[in-house]
Image (cartoon, rainbow, N blue to C red; front, side, top):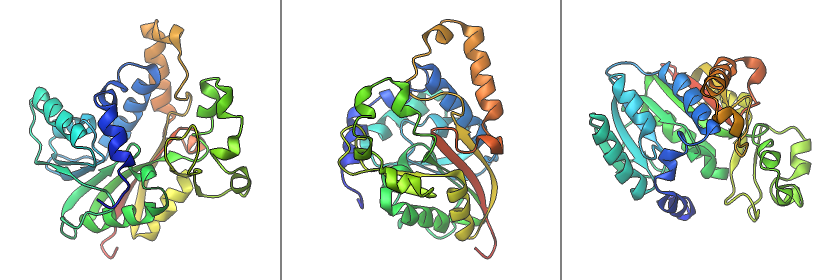
Length: 280
């Protein structure tokens, strides 16, 4: 594997929490609804799909239900075992389950897949090598095929520092994110390596930066989204969670606003879909 074992270790220990986080919290339900809504716009029946950083397979199952043929890849054997269980319970069958690193897709041929999906944190976890990971995704998707990719958002992640109302996340803020770099309005930055709050260095970027990077790889951008534009992880939202109508209304509003250009950098996650041009 090309990366430090830190990411693998984290998800080995995280286990089935990676599946549960989308159903046990309001913010998780919103995150899932937005990601699913955006992703499924770009999935076609019969597609050969490579799902990178697949985790326990929640989005892979959605794509299988739409008639896609999905290969799941993840750095964590524990997550892949969970995926096998969840996919079997859904009544579907995956093409394959592969332990892999998104920095090394050499086992796949040039232009092998109709669709490459990498949503969630996988791109952010490779920090300064994000460009290598995106280049690998570009290589294995067919001309005319699509990539749906996500990153943690540079500006959308900032509300997380206040959502939980924890003073230690703001005391010594520069131990987490360098304010001098932030002041220069960068398209991306890497969080500080010894942060006592952020468990590993992370690649954070803007919507525009990710769009432009994909264009530079020979892609045409099809669309983008922000998740979650109205809420931040760490908000408990207990009264909303206790009222099914209020919860459903909030989820609908978040999905409705997620693809508005005005909201592009308001969510914790940036999502971009792009089509590989014939000469790309």
